[in-house]
Image (cartoon, rainbow over all chains, first blue to last red; front, side, top):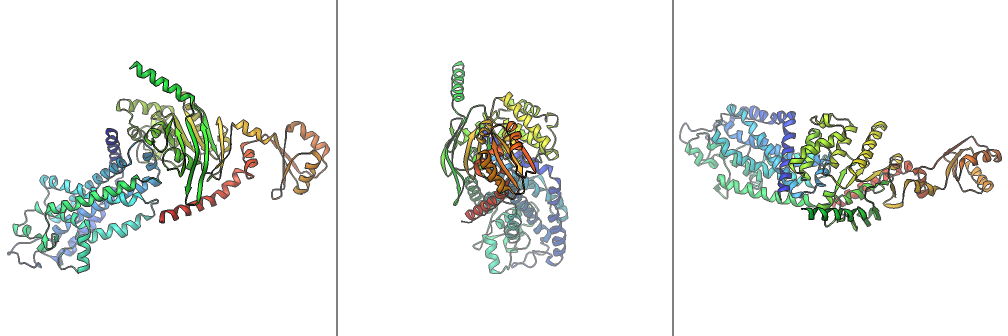
Length: 283
Length: 346
């Protein structure tokens, strides 16, 4: 048992070293947030304006939520997603470059390998998501230590679930060729249909349905609720987040942070379970 | 304490007496393609054991099964007394393996690659650094321990992989095509290391190769073709199967000459019309050639003799040379890939 823990640690450490040494990847990962924040955020906040305005209930005068404040947690989520799924799928690269064989032939449990990989990927993704906060001032988001202390566990939970999903996908992939396909058919739709970039009011029924069954929606909702709760928004907004399209509702009831945690955690555990099962299969 | 030590030395003695690898009717099938068709052999403690054969003969598949990476379709095998199916962890602890394809993490340093391996193989923290440096020293990479592996040459990477394979003091080291892709000089150096290793570490080496010259380093060789063992012997023993020296003559009428030589000297000949050659074996070429030149009045353009090589053995046993097999093995590989894809789709 203790040697499996040591193995998990060393596999985690390898992920960290690889991430830290791959500076282009770190810098490159910041391009999407910049584009989304400056182009969409700035471009749309003019026309979207005060999100509190168009809602079904009228806020008291002077109460407003900037679109950039809304979109910022979504962008954090997006970066987290990309990093997490990429880390998970990097199992395929490990396979292609032979490193996976070296690990698989070692006298350790295969579940430990998958778990170490997932922990490493989740840590990397959490760091990548945290980096987005460099742009927090631009979006009018106030950062503070309490915010991070509350947010990091949630980011890590989200990253863990999505890395596990990446490992699950990768565990049966034999070549890197399918990587782009996965990105286009899984990663992008998951992010774009998660409410990361648009308020969830007045959606067409089919889209609303997809958003509701998309686990990523709950992860974004979770991050958004935590970030917004540290922004000194008027109580009226915080109490009615879902009425403004700022938060998810399930069966007509607004979700809470803990509701989101429960859903993301369940999804994560299922993915870890499937991932480890598939990883344990031998050829 | 001393009791345990005696016990250990006793089991050690016992192990030395029994073969380190015992393989019994091992089979690996992919759909209806059989990559390995029920092979049996033993590897003795401390020897260099070679698997020779063209690409696609089933060598790597066999090693992968013995290293517990692939599940056999049928058959049994033990390594150091441990069953490759039911005692996988013990088997893995007993073996080191250098894969045919590179398997280092290029973004880590040599030391970090070694350390990664050391943790996976549960080498106690206190010993780790010392052992890693000793192994790096042995392959003369100790002064580059903290360099990123990406900057290493092909030969250096191979040496590092060999050092890594030995880090956890395995009793058996698998070398799967250890020098493929290396230039001849690096190949020779790599072999110097391997041979020194065997002296210093007293380890059994299980080698696969499709290079004849490389197979010559082995104490015993299995010749494998199409998933089957066609011969198992010492290199000398195999070569003596060929029966003597090999004479090749170049002529414009190979078929006619083959016939005439066969009748006149009462020896078996093989005509190769495409190359315009006739080949035959004689016991002692040095004394036969003068007689042959004196007595034979056919039109011979060139005459060549050589001592038998393992390629001649392979040719004799399979009717093809390894080089020619390499060419059609590409088709075999392609067929196998198709087969595997089909299986995955199911």
